[in-house]
Structures are given as C-alpha cells and as structure tokens.
Length: 170
Image (cartoon, rainbow, N blue to C red):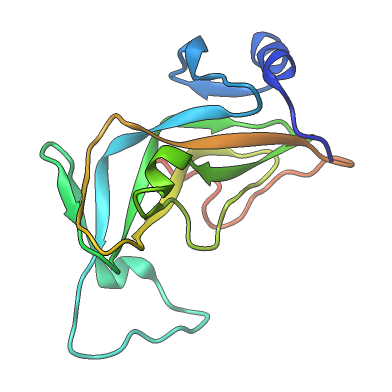
C-alpha cells in the first residue's frame, strides 16, 4: 500500500474516483485531506451501572445527540462522538486512515480511540471518537478542520458493506 500525495489525491478527485462532498481544494494537503467537524455530537451518558461490552452492545443505548450550535466543553478524560461534515466515497482500490491534526493533538485532543480505518468502497460521513487526554477542558466547535484523511492504495479491491456502510448521522 502507498500513501497518496497532493498531486495523486487531486488526480483521483478530478477523475471522480475519490469523492469528498463538500470539498474546498485547499483542504488537500501534502499527503492528506483536512476534514471538518459537523454540527452534532453524541455524548456518552453517565449511568449508575457499568456498560457491558458484548456482541450486542449498542452505543446509542448509552448516548444522546447534542447540537454544536454552541461550543461543547469536553472535560478531561471524557469521550464524545463527532461526525465529519464531509461525505466520503472511496473506490474499491482506495482506503484511508483518519488522523488527528497536530495542532489539536498538542492540546490533548485525540480524534479516534481505535477505529481509524476508512474501508474501501464506503460512501458515508466518518464518525470521530474524540477524547480529551489533557488536564484542561477543551471547547469543541463545529466547522473546524478537526482531522485529516490519509488515503492509500490497496492491494486488490474490496467494498465495505458492514453495519456503518451508509452512516450519515452520528
């Protein structure tokens, strides 16, 4: 697998193979594409009982959707789900990895807990598992270029058709 750089990313976009909607061309960097945080987050509710981690666990049973019309204060040690404003379509021969941006990582914001892989063949918005690993509260704003997508060529082709293949909401 090889990471696509600026010119290769633009060629894939111009050919219609890699689709990111909406996209401003200045979001395409040296070897990644900046993605922005959408207008909603999902907040994990604190309950009296531990959450079971099992095959039938559903995060929606333990979270609520909140608007980012006003900034959200992410407390130290807390995790929320964000979603990219952009909808991404990858062909079967491209995959991606979501990465945080160093400017925010240096302040203690992690963009994903474990699920950084963007599968080949997706056409969806990407959910971000945002955690504050600093000792200070962080104010989260909608519309900020919060993360980046690193795109890679796959060996062979594949098309993701799993549980989150068509996610458009958190």
